[in-house]
Length: 113
Length: 116
Image 1 (tube, helix red, strand yellow):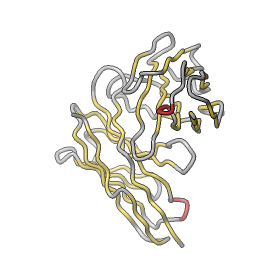
Image 2 (image 1 turned 90 degrees about the vertical axis):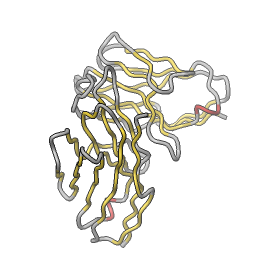
Image 3 (image 1 turned 45 degrees about the vertical axis):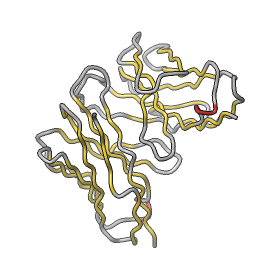
Image 4 (image 1 turned 90 degrees about the horizontal axis):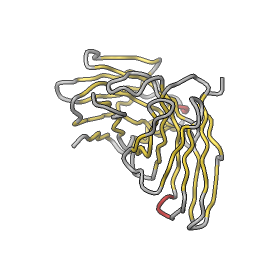
């Protein structure tokens, strides 16, 4: 069964600190992996999209890594800001007909001052 | 360029009532989607439209119908609302829906629906 598991479920860090969110997946055949940021009360916004051949992709202070062999991804946030407080969702796409996006449940990040 | 817009933002219904959620995009995207998001669960696909004139069921289609009115608009209808349909509904669009596409999905702001 295609699944995406994220950890931790929630995380609290101090402003200025770094953090890493994890995503493990069992999706086959794998096509690409996405990270979204969802602010409270808003729709998700795409941060990165990585294909099988990409190991790392950055978007400002956000850096995503992908290990297709172990089927793991991480999202590293550097020098966190209060505005980083949000839910971060890992989404994996499979090669198949139709839309095959499998969503994780998300990690809720709270950045405090 | 408004992106993806949804109406209404909030709605309260009584069990058995019907309503239509509206979605429009101005990015000339071929594909559009309806998702629901419930606490503790990931986004779940209700219906999608790969291109104008086509619609297909997603993971949780029961109790819903959709219409792809034209390339811009994709509506979701609840014929007889039930409390289990209390949720936040998101519309999204992307250039392509082909398996393996890396096209970015753009989401609307959501409709918060409560069914009493």
